[in-house]
Length: 386
Length: 232
Image (cartoon, rainbow over all chains, first blue to last red; front, side, top):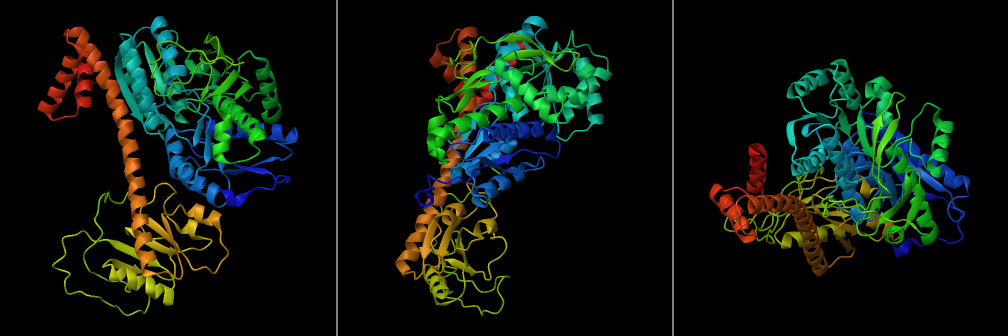
């Protein structure tokens, strides 16, 4: 884009796009991602911005509508003249933004765990992929609870794809899938009681849930109402964070498992500052979570990269961010130059009575991203931060 | 992977040979009388699929020339003016006058076009490269246009459009293949272990089954893995 050379002396803001849903059934989690993004931007601006210029977010609320993500991405790039976008939780929304950023050469920063098997020169992925959460979760569950799995998920791309990966892992380790059910994304409370009855009937050792959004609450509450015991048949999830536990009630969430790169209880210097900052701003009973944390650290990685490039040009930003490291709340993370995915930590947590997760497994460092499961998760390959 | 919102997969259409001009009676246009050029040999050449072009420009001398030249190429041309709020979807190619609000009038998101889009620059406004970038078009025609310019920009735009579409199709196919390959590898490993086959034999077994049952090799591989799980 030779025609829009920026004046080097300018103090005009760096404009960036932000696309998370504040309304609709995905708002429970996306609202926290929005907050993480805005906190990071505010912190950077309080320090004087990037090379003397503040970051200015242009924020739209797609209202949990998949199509709107694509339309707003177009609007951001075409009407607002933005080339870098932070956003998206569901894989369907990411796939709606993908053609836009690819054709107009933008850069989407995607702060959510997802099912892997994707690569785009116009996306930086900062959430975990299956080799960074699913592999270890499967191992731990089979060791502790048994090998009969029941899969339950929301009916869209991510649950079906991550169940495909989980199925391979369970079978490779001699386990079986005793049932598999999907409910629509907007499923209401009444649909979960019969489902949990079916699950009870199938007598699994573990319920693996990829239910996302508001209905997460309904699943765990139905489980609780039917008197199942997490000590013998826990729900294990990749998406149930502190935010969802809070929404369902601490007593309802207690004893269930989640694999994530980050929990509020992670013991790092950077995390204690992060949590207290967040709670100062949003209230002392507001928990942090993995998606919020990824949203926060990816803006910081972006700012650090922008400091070097002093340009919003997608190719330059992308080239410079490869291999970049950041001391994130979860620990040191880096962008894997082979895949443009973040090398993040592997952790497994068990929810306690206070709505927090007790960490029962933690990798010794961040784990290299392997979005296509080429290593098939045989071992956790550690990445090293300097 | 599903393909949504794509009007039709007109992959390798030949340049149209048939002669038809039916511009002038579109619902967006008021009072232009119809001009039909060379309707005589229409039936004789009616085998080739119809290639339709919408022309969304003012009907001044330049516009008239553009429409006439397209008709001379024996293309079904439809003139639309004033410019509609949303560009219609049902044409193979669209010539559209460049204006500041054109990106908002394009109904598809960039990267998933339904038609080959050719911008028409009448040279009245200052050059705006950012606007041209935002339209994500396949070609650009400047006034005053010549017959050669019109023919070549239409050909290049169609080629770009179809090439993009083929590449997207290839990526979809690759994604699907990658999934299949994982299944085939695992099924092969099972067969090698359980039936004491060599790798070559295991693969041939899968392929033969697929051919006999007329299903994909991925489906056979999935069945092998499933049944092994059931039996063990």
